[in-house]
Length: 287
Image 1 (cartoon, one colour):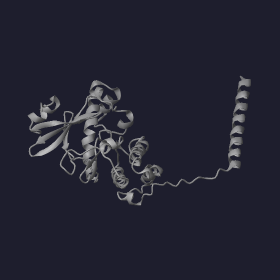
Image 2 (cartoon, rainbow, N blue to C red; image 1 turned 90 degrees about the horizontal axis):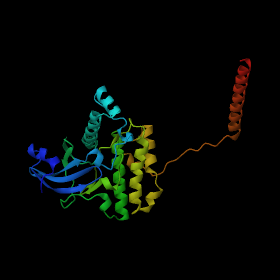
Image 3 (tube, one colour; image 1 turned 90 degrees about the vertical axis):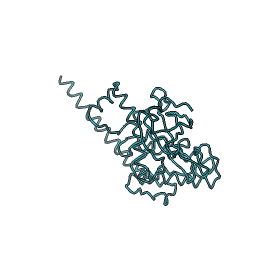
Image 4 (cartoon, rainbow, N blue to C red; image 1 turned 30 degrees about the horizontal axis):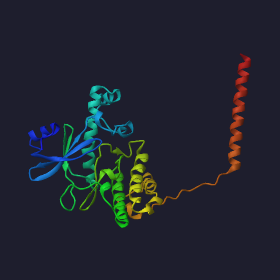
C-alpha cells in the first residue's frame, strides 16, 4: 500500500517500517495497520477539525488544564494559535488517558507515541490474530450479553475510580478481543471531578451500554446501574470492586409533603410581598 502523507514522517523517522492497509475510518480519525519491526500495530490518524463529525464542544473541553495563562487566553479567544493548541490538546489527551487508564487496570490499547496528529498503539486482535471486531458487529446470546455487560460495568467503575469518564462510550468504540473487551477512542474523555457535565455524560455512557445489551438480554431494561454507580461515587463509597455488589436498583427516599407547612410558607411569602409593595407605595407618595 502507498504510504499516506500523514504517516510518511513516521516512516522517515523509523517509527513505522511499512503501512499494511487501512483498518477503518471513523468520525474523528482513520486507522491503519502498520508494521514496526516484528510487531503489527495500528496508527490512528486524526482528521482535521473541519473534517470531523465529532465536534469538540465546550462540554468536553471543560476542566482541561493548560500549561500557562498565555495558552488559556489563546484558547478563550479562539485565535489561530488557540485553535492549533486546542487540536494538540485534543489529540494528546487520548494518549494521556490511555496511560492513566492502563495504570488503573482498564483494558485499553497500549500507546507508544502521539506526534503530528498520529497516535501509534497496539493492534487489538481476536483469538485468531485478526483485528478485533467492534462490539456492534458481534452477535450475542443472552448469557454472553449479561457476562459482557458485567465486564463493562467493571471497566467504567475502574475508569471512574481513576477520575475519568469516557464521554462517548457505546458499542461502536468497544472491541472484542480474545480475553474480553477493550475500550477505545478516548480523546474526548473528561475529568470526573473537574467537569460540570460529568454526571450527565457518565449516565449516558452506562445507559448506552444498557440499551445495546438489552437487545440480547431484555431484563437489563429494568436496571438503573448508572444512577447506582454515580450515587456510590458521590458518597465516596465507590471502589474498584463495587460492581460485585451492584443490584441495578436505586432506592429513592420520598418525603411526605406537609401540606400545612407549604401553605404557611406561601402565606408568609405573600405577606412579605404585600409589605414590600406598601413601603414602595409610601416612598412614591412622599416623592
